[in-house]
Image (cartoon, rainbow, N blue to C red):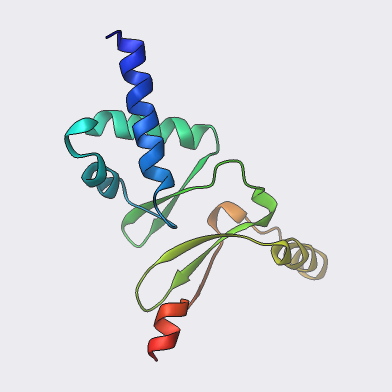
Length: 130
């Protein structure tokens, strides 16, 4: 098997694993999913490549790097919801953010950085448990 075909197959496995997560993930979670099929160095390279292409976003929360696959979403509408109870991070695209950004810019002269916008609260599951 040629090296190029091997790298392409491994890249596809990494992308498939990433798309399988609902919300944010850590690299160690991808390593667990792919176990002996793809090496850690390849996983890191693929995450870096996807990040450079704007398809994966990296966020530092506390001392942990989290990643989120956003594919070709509209960054103007993209933000994350963080559950304060269970810590689950949910990637969200919503038209309401565009209006919010415009109002903040107009009223306060402040530009929101969507790449790092996290709204905290409680997810549906945790809210139902309360």
